[in-house]
Length: 202
Image (tube, rainbow, N blue to C red; front, side):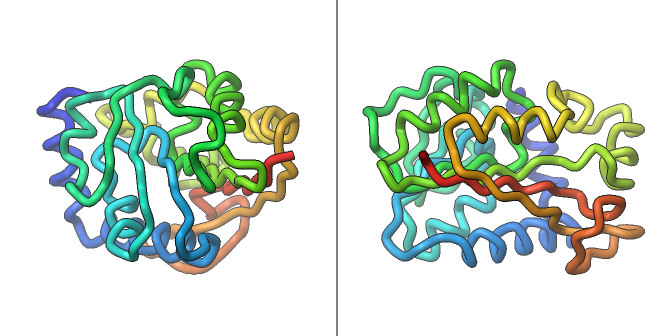
């Protein structure tokens, strides 16, 4: 993401709709994280949700391949510029690794998952929020010429979950339904924008 692209993205994030989306994602994560856990967020970009976690007292490290995008992250985060496929961290460095709508945009997501398993502690967990290609939200974004969603590389959710299951005990659920820009609690595949895979390290 270029610095101009980062600025445009940050401006769009200030809309009421996106503020509600980020708040819902943050609440979801709060319900699945434990006090004191050290967190790595992969592909964090400007780290809006991650900033909320840091404000809650979590130790958060943000990793992104784009120096320009990550330069917009809050100062409350430790930030590292590096590819997800080659994380510059020692084995067993984190309790939780997050992919907040980022795993599908990584060239080699299988290698990123392998690195995730390596940097997690023995009881570590991964939480991957994926865009749901079956949703109206996804189809609408794909129809927009300038949407970031058009950069997506991986849309086969079953294949991605199967790959994650090679190194993690997984469970999954649909989350965050949108209808006409209205956000509500729902888990129907046709309306849920996100598919979340929760994994515990084997």
